[in-house]
Image 1 (cartoon, rainbow, N blue to C red):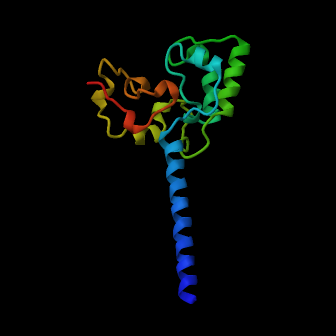
Image 2: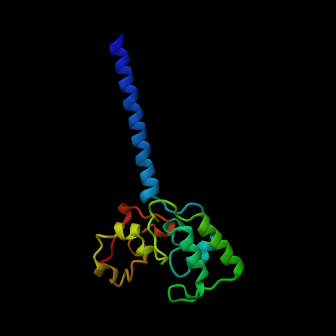
Image 3: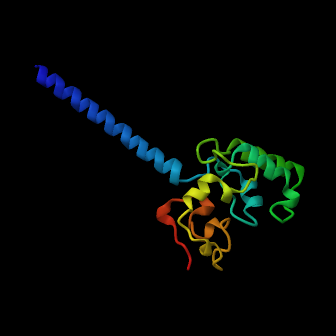
Length: 163
């Protein structure tokens, strides 16, 4: 009887452990490499996606998005000024959907996704010369290598670095 009880408890522990491991793998895929865009906003996609991809809000903390939205008249060398209503709607969406976890930990005042510790770590194997290739042009051109960037899909298995 004691052997059956021990066997049953061991089976239960192994089953429980496998469930937790499976959940962790699913969560990792969803959060670390999966679709980064939570929620959606048509105005954000239309306005921000006119000149570049509509960067996933989760890549910067709320404070950085506030800084981006407060400086649209000199938005990385371009005047991207919006009327007050659309700017407020997009700003609210970006702040509410902003990153809060380890992906945005250590983000400095400069609101450049390409300079976040997470981005630098994820792209450390990319040689500096690759960013200057005509098909890429800069680290900010996510869609050059990430085929699903427009959808917020940055999974490594979908990366194609142009030559």
